[in-house]
Structures are given as C-alpha cells and as structure tokens.
Image 1 (cartoon, chains in turn red, orange):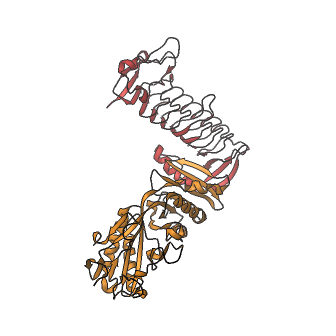
Image 2 (image 1 turned 30 degrees about the vertical axis):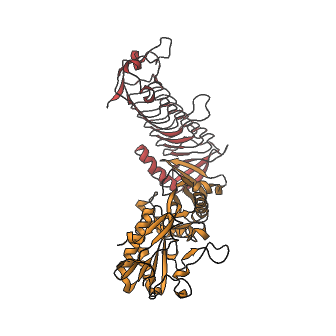
Image 3 (image 1 turned 45 degrees about the vertical axis):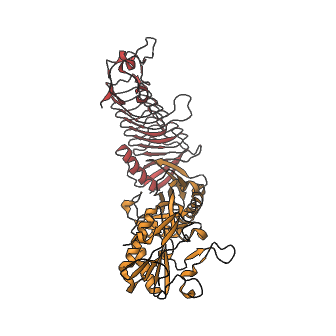
Amino acid sequence: MSALTFRLKGEPEERIDCSSLVPHHLANFSPAEIARLPVGTTKRGLLVGDVFEVSRNDAGEIRFEGGSGRLDRIGQAMQGGVIRVAGPAGFRFGRAMTGGELHAEGSVGDLCGSAMAGGRITVGGDCGARLGGPDAGEMKGMSGGTIHVKGNAGERAADRMRRGSVLVGGDCGKDAFSRMIAGTVVVKGKAHGVPGRLMKRGTIVLMGGAERYAPTFVDAGVHDLLVLKLMAKALGEVFGVVPFDGSPMRKISGDTAILGLGEIYVPA
Amino acid sequence: MPVIDLAATVNGVRIDDDFAEAFPMSGTAIQITAINEKWALEAATKMTGFATSVIACGCEGGIERVLSPDETYDGRPGVRVLFFGFDSGGLEKQVTTRLGQCILTCPTAACYADYEAETTIELGSAIRYFSDGFQVSKKFAGKHFWRMPVMEGEFLCEAKVGYTAESVGGGNLLIMARDVRGALAASEAAVEAMKAVPDVIMPFPGGIVRSGSKLGGKYPGMMASSNDAYCPTLRGATQSKLDDDIGSVLEIVIDGLTAKAVSDAMRAGIKAICDLGSERGALRIGAGNYGGGLGPHHFALKELLP
C-alpha cells in the first residue's frame, strides 16, 4: 500500500502544529475528516486541508511531500508506523515519541527527539538546539530510542539525556551533553564550547574532540575496553555506520563537580 | 535368565527393556569469553566446579561446548556453559555466586546470556554492587550490560539471562561391562557422542559417575545412598540387578534444556556404545528409575535404539 501523503501547498504563513498527524491518531479517519483537523497556531484556525493536499491510503506510513521549517511537532508522541518528510521540518520533531520511525531528508528545528522514550529518528541535515533534551520545565531529556543526525547538532544537545543512543555525523554546538544522566552519544566531529557540564553518567564518543573541557573533567588515560568494541558493533547495526571501531581510546571522566561517572572517549 | 527383560541386542550389547526416569529442572545457558580459549576454559572450568549433583552442590552445571570467535557475542574465543537447579531461585543463587567468584575474578573474562526467554534470572545485576558505586549500566542493541571497574580494567557482564522451567535433569544410562576397562571405554565413547548434541551437559567427572545412587537409605537424613542393586561386589548380598557376566557398572547422567535434547543425547550414547561393541566395551545398557512414580519424564531405551 502507498503512504498517506500530505503534499504542502506552499510555504505556510504561520507555524503549523502537525502533532495530530501521526499514524495511531489517523488510523480511523477518512480523508475528509483528516482535511478538517486543525493545524493552525493563530486565530485564523488553519485546517489540514488549507495547508496540504491529502491523498490517503495507508495511515501506517505517512509522507510529507515538501517540508518546511514551519512544520512543527511532526511525529510528536507517535507510537508506531513510519513518517517521512521530504524536506526540512520545524521544532519538536519526534518529541516524546515512543515508537516507530521518523525520517526527515532536510534539517529540523530545536528540541528534536525531546523527551522521546522509544523509536527511531533520522535527520538528513542539521538539527537545532537541545537535541533529545527536555522541554521547558521537564526534568529529563530522551529516555530511550535512537536519533541519527547526519549533519550538525545545535547547542545543548543531549541535555539531561537519560537513556538511548544518539549519533551526530557533524559537530555539536556549544555545551552539549550538559546535565546528562545516562545514555550514549557518538559525535563524528567536534563538540564546541564546554561539553558535559554537570553530567552524572553517560558515555560520549567525540571523534573530533572538544573545544575545551571543564576543569572538573579529568584525563583517565587510554583504555582498550571490550564495551567500546561491542558498542561500535551494535551501534553500527543500528545506524549503518559509526565513526569508531572499538580501538583503544582516551577516557575523560567527569563531571567531578557532581557524581563524576560520566565518560568522554576521544581518539588515543 | 536376564535380570531385566531385553529390548534388543545390538553388536553383542544387550539393551534393557527399561527406562530412565528424569525430573523437571530450571535451566539456563551463559556464554563466557576471554582473550583466548585457555582463559575462557579456565573461567568456565572454575565456574562449573563442584556442580555434579543438585542434591549436594546446589546445582548441576557443565561446559556444553567450546565456541569459536564467530559464535560469541564479542568475537573472542568462548565457552557455553549450562546450569540446572531445582527452581529459579536456587539456580540464580548458584549462578550468581559462581559468577562473582569465578568469572568476575578471572583475567579478561566476560559473561553474556546465551538463553533467551521471557523469564529471567540475574547475572551482572546481582554482583554489580562489588563495584561499590562505580558500576556502570549500559543499554544498547536491546541488551543491558553492567560494566564493573576492576584492577585489570573492566569486567563486562550482561545484566540478566533467560531460563526455562522445562529443563530436564537426570536422564541416564547404566553401562555394564565385564570389567572397569570395558565400562570406561564404552562410557567414554558415549560421552564423546553426547557432547555433539546441543543443549545438554553430563555434569559428573568426565561425564561419568561410578557411584550411582538410589533414593534415601537406611540411615536417617540420607537423601541418596549407593545403588546397591548395581554394585557388582554386593551380588548375593542384595537384590542385584546384575547378570553373572557383569563385573563393573558406570553411569552417565544427562541434563538438558529440553526433553528432546536429553533423549537425543541418550540415543547418541547408546549408538556409540553399540558401535564399540561388547568385545571392547559394554555387555549391557540399562537405565535408572524409581518405578516411574516420581519423575514425569520417562526415556524408554527401546525407543532410543540405534
């Protein structure tokens, strides 16, 4: 069966809330009912039909043809199925999702994968700030699932991350991994600013190193660890390829200002 | 007159029309890897020491087979080890105690689950506190590991392992020969054949037990005592089940993760004994049972003929 398709009629004049356009929500809706769902965020009250041409078939797979940085909350709280965006997407891409697959060919905005608990996100371009982090007022960021950003990640990536795996193909913006609780992040490029501030636990592989480390991080030496080999193999199966192979790496421990059981691995 | 009815005679080996009576147990399998096969075997041998009989050892355990690097989870040489207990609680206690004393302590060794099931017992989760707060939980690829810093570097252990309550303990063969040399030759041939069967172990020394037992005894508190009916030196002094030409008896006890694995192993053992023949090996094959009223698994020898 072909996918349920939302073809963008033109660049939206306001930010669009796409949070209702997820497979489990649309499963029992007719095309006409879908077209009447509200997606506007101003008093104009835009409906799906005002923004998209809808062609319905299998709601288990949804396609957005023609993306936009104004399409917010795509895949928010999705529980299963597949959503593909042929282009960029806006804020909160895949926020709080618990299952399924979410793919964007272009870049996405802030809070991608924020507080997600399961499922898989792939971003073909860059992502904004607080990748996998908490939204305002929340105590923790992502607690499961995987995120693959092929480009760069913005500031404070993996802030308060609790569990799950993240692969960033480019660089990370300022102060990534701050307050990290646990989980695994692999960065092919460099971490700008001071990564890992106040991280308690968690594993970070920085193939391009960091701009600088906080003085509360300590060099623990070069180690040949079995877990790095297993992680390289396992994450390679998840992401297709990872930029480390399990060879010995230098361990930077921190943040000793708090628990100090976090670990940043850089090439030896 | 034969002591027990004959099911068949193959290559001069008489096979009793009798059955092995076996019992349900909780069983599991783990994978131990190390920098090389020597250290993997060292760890596995230590871990499965003193694990011949659940009655006195708390569990029955053994090395199922050596694994090549492409069979192990981390790509290093390894060993698959099976353990069996009366119940999941007893099994977990034995496995985790042995894990802590024999695998955690062994240079370069790592430990992974090698049996998947909905029901689990703890592995690394039970011994992680040895790390005194420095232990690290790691979840990836659907697996949960505990990383335990040790003086050598780091001990990696999967958090839990599945177990099955459908395991079978106590499958057995009684190998009767003119003398101990013949009994040992036949038993060794049988054990070698059984080792090729997956999901089974023969927990006694070299897979063979010379002091087979019966339930209870004349002394109070004895859960088991010598199986006098099969002791050749007691012929005449007890209700012997031995023919006049039998001078020595050895037993092979088989534990398996499934009843089919146990019956496959018994079949392989019987064939190996028969292939060796009565001139060089056994004169007769029997099986131990308690009349059929205790154990729900009955393995009739005549159904396992080569």
